[in-house]
Length: 622
Image (cartoon, rainbow, N blue to C red; front, side, top):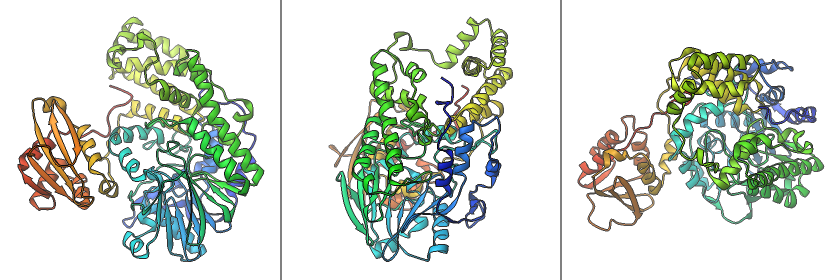
């Protein structure tokens, strides 16, 4: 399959351009946002090259147009009483005017961009207080700017409702803890974090331009939506909250505003094919359920809607246009699910399904069904993974050698490095970039210092990036090429949000310890430690034996070696301590910020067994 999942021209280019511009009120130059110290949190200044209507050969034509639409920024009127600020972050902030103030839906990724967006709104619509805050789902780009629009103490004093879908806090925290280090590194490839912003580098990320820099925050919700559909009135605005759990996020919902004839699809109906498993990694999302939720929105809410919008990209107006848009999105996810399972049941593997799958022309020609973010290729492989797991059923693939070992054998079988490179150069000249990337990757893993192999592999990846319609594939290919040429960039330790850590349940703290335990060093050790959370009153008993940590709620079944008591604020201080976990614990225990009863040395012994992950591990080389 070509790297572009569809070669059909986009028939609705002008319509989407009109929609992306519609309702524009005002913006700030280049959407340039800085913090109090003058550090740049967000700017579209470097994306000015997208002003050209026709793109260069280094960017796939459809992606160029999509990137241009995502480059539009500022305050937009969606419909009466509903406004959005778009292009100030990877996501959109939606502002709904109530009787006495405004209800904020999804306060962006970081506090700095959220504050700038609300400031822009207030400059043109008045200094209205925030009277409600809604998180549509449990991804950081939809809650991280909370403290940029609302002060928590003020919210408590004024009893401002903060609404989230069922399971929000658990999934918000857990996704950023257990696999956070690996996801963070892989996300660099998905979003092209260290790529230059130009026609040979990153142009977009599908859902928006890029990921902002700044302070990720979280104010815990005060109201959880637990029923499939619940209607609440917030500041005079009637809102129907409809759960869409295990779709784009494990905790997600979309919103209907019946009095305003508006439907907000959160992130399960955007202007691009989404991800069933993003390149950064995640639990595979259920395409069948995803389609069903869109069908429910089409059946229950579309008949009384004049506009449908989302927390990424731009809206669609007109009742018939809304119905068509939702039908196409519904059918796209269901088609991918059903046809993948059909081919899977015929014996095709994920790679084979990905090569064979095509959308019917009636779906493939629609803008919102194109793979600017997710792709048909990796989405159908995700569906296979959802049902069958990683193993393709071929015993020859059941116990493969790791890439360093297999790479050296491939090179030997091909007659050595020089012979491999000679053939690969010929194939590159014929445009066989997928194969050249694959075969030279073996040589890179066999001989990571082979500069000719690195250069040719980088050239092949670069050409694949230039041809990709998906912004995330483009970013991944181009960043791979860049790291082969320049090496892995050095960055500081991954920042962890204090608000997220402060919300960490004790059970997830135990989980985070368990996945960091160095089993070889822990072999032969036994200990029991009791952990008590002052805020929730929870106690968990942790047991180390057989180089494995296990834990149960409640007091220890036998006298523990130590009992640790800490508050939410102490948890945040400790987990983000610049000296690291053991040293930070020792300092906070000495200052009595953390209380320890019993043998504190045993706690320190445990903490010294926990591995500190390297955030910039190698990906495209050993």
